[in-house]
Length: 150
Image (tube, rainbow, N blue to C red; front, top):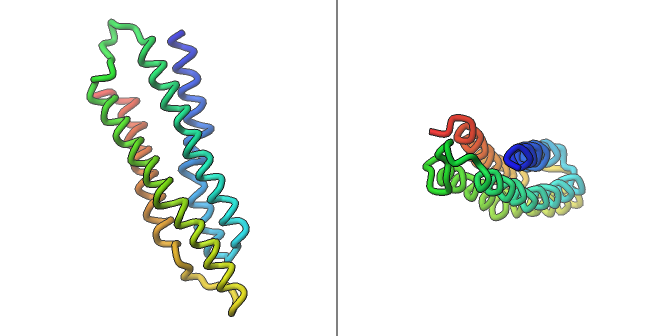
């Protein structure tokens, strides 16, 4: 059972958390290119992958719950608590900073395109860049903690 949960946790992390971290960076390119429809679609995708990332946490808790007691891992282990904290920060930043900024950028591009052509300084771009950078850094820290287990 431990191998099953570990495998599900890692596979879900790769295929769910990966896009959660990478898609905002793709959106920044679309913002610069003035592609409002693409930015709006990416905002929906980032929102969906961020919410789906809760499945990764669920499988992680499952893996921890069936772990061999001799390994000494528990929900009170420092690396587990820090991983949960950094993941929660990444989740919140994506949901409350990145996705709204992407939606704002899509709307701003639509307005700007109708007025005078695409504007490379679209509202929300810097928040997408900042938020996705912070979120990605938090996720990298989680991966380091999962491997290192200090």
